[in-house]
Length: 451
Image (cartoon, rainbow, N blue to C red; front, side, top):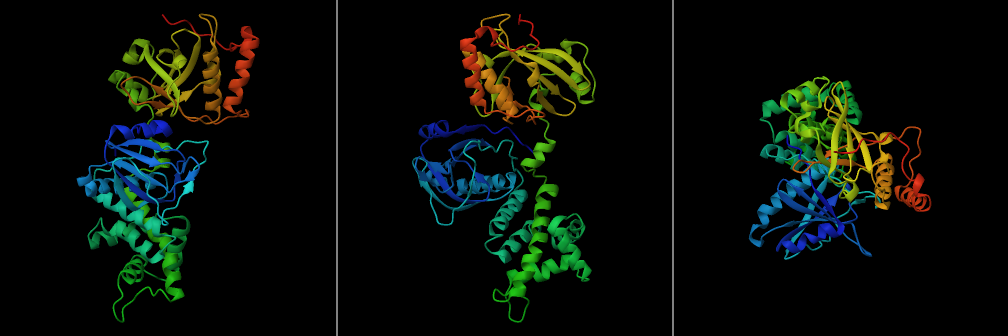
C-alpha cells in the first residue's frame, strides 16, 4: 500500500493557499484524535485539505476540514472528504467523523454542538505524514464502517457494535465471513481476548453468538424475535461486553487483511531510506541491503558529492544548512557514514545511512561549527545550536535532496544527558559568541574543506 510523503503547511503559510483558489467545501468533524491549534494544509492523494486550527486568535473553533470544491461537485468532493477523515482517524489511532458541511468561495468555519475534540499541545506540531492511500473500494467501505463504529462507541453501543460487524460483513459472503471470524477470534488479546475466553467457558459458540445476539439483535426488532431492548439493562450489558470483541475483529481486518497501516505500524516497519535508493547503483543497493560493505566511494553513484539540505521538520532549512555537500567518509556492514559540510565550510554534520535496516541516524556528537576554513557567523552558531538541542529534544531532522522526498532521521533518545530548551541554548551560545568569538567554535573533529 502506498504511504507517500505528505507535505504540510502551518498557520499563515496554510492560509496563503486559500487566495489561489475559488470555491471551498468545509466539513465539520467530531474527532477523538489530537487536533492542531493552528491551521494545517496537507497534500494527500493529489488533493489539498486544510485542517482548521482549534484556536484562532481569541476565539475557540470547532474542528473542521476545508478542501477546494466546485459548487456543482459537492457530492463527489464529500466522498473523498469522508475517505480522508476515515484514513486520518485510523492512522492517528482514533476517529474523525463528518457532522455536516457548507460551501463558500473561501474556506469558512463550520460549528456544531456535535463537534468535539481533544486538544494538541500548542508547543508541538500536528503530523499526519505517510498516511496510506486507499485505492480499493472494498477497503474504503471497511474504513467507513470502522469510522462510524469508533465514533458511536461511547455514544450508542448497540449501533457501534453493528458498524463494527459491518466492517467484516461487507467484505465476505456469509460462509467465508463465518470462517474468517472463527479463525481470527484466537488472535484477539486484551479485553477482547478475555471476553472470548469467558464466552467459551460457558460453552458458547462465539461466532454464532456475535451474529445472533449481536448483529441480528441490534439490526432487527421483529415481533417475538431476539432484540437488544434499550430498556433492559442485561441486554445493554451484553452488547457492551461483546463490543470489545467486535471492535477487535474490525480493527484486525483493516490492519491485517486489508493491510492498512496506522502511524505506529509505519514507525516500526517503514524503510526511511527509500527516497535515496534511486541515487545508488542497483548492485550497491543490493549489497548494502544484504549487509555488505562498500570499499570504494565510486560505488555510491549519484549519492556521493550530492547536495543536501538539513532541516528541522516542518521548517525550511536555514541558509547555513542548505545545499550542503554530502561526502562518504567510512562504511560498515550495511551502513555508510556521511560528512555534510556547508558551502562556506563552517558548519559540518555527520549522518549514518543504515540501508540494511532502513534507517538514517544523526551523529550529533560528531558535528559542529569550525573557523578552520572560513569565518563563522552568528547565523552559523544560532542554527547549529538550534539543530543540536532540538534533535536532543526529539525534534524530527530531515535530509532533503532536490527532486526526492525528504529522508527523516531517527528520533534521538537522550542517554546521560538532560535536554535543554533549544531557544535558551541558542541565546546562550550567541551571547558567548559575541563576547568571546574565539571560543565559540565546537571542539570536535574538524572536517576537511569541500573542493
